[in-house]
Length: 260
Image (tube, rainbow, N blue to C red; front, side, top):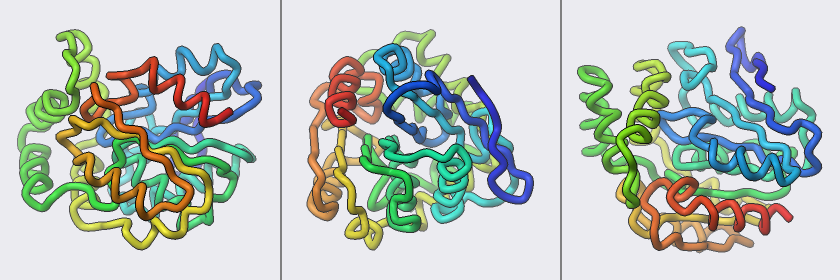
């Protein structure tokens, strides 16, 4: 079932709630500039196994409202706090991919992990996001030829072969976002860091990262593993930035083992 949750001065975020009666809840935070739909290959499997799967579109992305502002890590984490509170979620496993991983980390530190008992970071854009050079290139393209930018993102995302129809689906998902929110997140990834958040995470943390990731280098996953206590790092040797799809069977199995 899909519904909207109002988070801040009339901004409505879209929530896809699959198997609401499930016995354990997994909350998914997508990457930039995608939407909850990137986790289709998790929802298919995990919901039928009895898990409640909740996908959230952040403000500016997917089916959510697209205000002109509110694209800092603090505000994005606060949005998640409102959703977890309004849905009265407890004992949740919070899964964040790429920028969603950065938002998850800020949520854990800023809101003391309220409602969250386990934490999964997938190819997380942390503790740093884009280099200035990469960010400025993406920014220029976003503001001048956003479909070209999205094609470049798609082309560099996966280590595994993707079909043309899959590439088209992925590209269209990115274009559902507003151009201003797409650009604003690039600036956040360039200018904000998460080093100080890492020691504040107090729940078991699973770190999954593709060894061939060209977007966020594998070395950053190793740094997260060193600085987040009670964390474990599992390298995905056949994945780039899309471990959730590229090695989906392994990913789903690992996730269910971790959630329990």
